[in-house]
Amino acid sequence: MAKQYWLLKSDAESYSFGDLKRDGSTAWTGVRNYQARNYMRDDMKPGDKAFFYHSNTDIPGIVGVCEIASTSFPDDMAFDPKDSHFDPKSTNEKPIWCAVEVKYVKHFKNPITLEELRKLEGLEKMVILQKGSRLSITPVTEGEWKVVMDVAK
Image: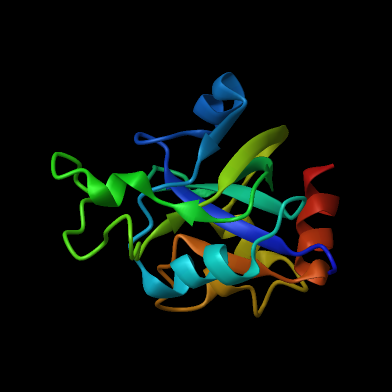
């Protein structure tokens, strides 16, 4: 199967790209949107690349590249009643939510801001730039990947 590309959004205060660099890798947990879950469960494969996007910050944007390091597995946060991502309908026997392992690849020298992304030719249909787009995981086309990577250089 061909390599696919993704954009993973994270609130920088909750888990930043610096945290991922420090940790080396992390389980991408806490996703509670069915479409985003389906991307992880059905489409993400080890070796796929992803942009790491800081959201809920003064200047949102893409700050670096990470890699999908595993196939999906049950999100244990859903089973913990003390966790804010707990879901009583999700059980070990029938897990509803999943996660994937993500590993650090590289920081961009300069973040590519949302404002800059909106101005780049070739990104007009990029999911994150569409009105009302709020998913924490979105697909990125190969063409969009190349445009962003060219700017990052």
